[in-house]
Length: 88
Image (cartoon, rainbow, N blue to C red; front, top):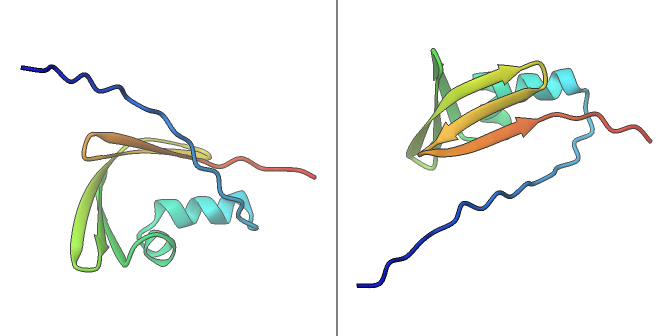
């Protein structure tokens, strides 16, 4: 039998959003903000975020929340959102 070894691959996505960091952080940490920006609906209970898309649902666990950073785990995969301020 062949043995398949899979590597973890880290990738980063960057999005430029023209808003204040505080408003953006509210959008990614509240049910109303997340449902407006990211999913059809979101429920939060304790550290569990339930996301609803087109009748499907996924649960993410909030692992860490700092001033401008939030870390979720979806199905064993980590998703970190970090807000940085750019100056021109």
